[in-house]
Amino acid sequence: MRKYIVEFIGTFFLVFTVGCAVLGQVALAPLAIGAVLMTMVYAGGHISGGHFNPAVTLAVHVRGKISREDLAGYWVAQVAGGFLAAVVAKWLVNPPTVKALSPTGRALWQAMTAEALFTFALAYVVLNVATSEDTKDNSFYGLAIGFTVAAGAFAVGGISGGAFNPAVAFGAATMGLFAWAKIWLWLIATLVGGAVAGFVYRYVTAKVVVA
Picture: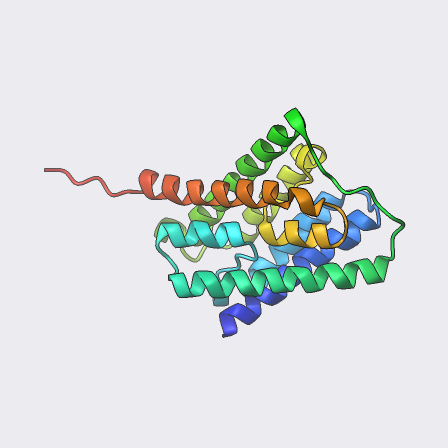
């Protein structure tokens, strides 16, 4: 239960920061988002692994670090934290009506590609800096994870919204930033990106057995 509480808290503050920064049209919002993810990872990584992202949790499950039971528990905690954060952020900022992102045609495929690629990058970084024995007890894991999200948001935020996280996507839809009718776009792209990262990590870190 402690792990789930930590995941709830971390995801809450991640989505809360996304909501306040984007709805409030804060300059350099991606930097704020990457920074809060970094701090939450440092705060809770030693308890839950500091996923705060269902796609990352899927990657860690594929990698073999958590069970199916924890996979489900993490997902529930993360989505719940993201939903509550979205409600609070929208109430706090009280923005004017915003136009929900709803890509169609070529833009839809571009958005899916952008989300899948940077979710892969995020999950791949997490697996290498936070789950590998070769980088065990390092002090840079939170910084690497947070800056991956910041880089992705700067690079493709204008194309896909820069979620890289199903819980963030649910939160963004709750706040009216993403169209509910297109929520599947972010869910499929991010979960595929996370799963592929898990399989790639397993392949590139497999031990070579010499006959």
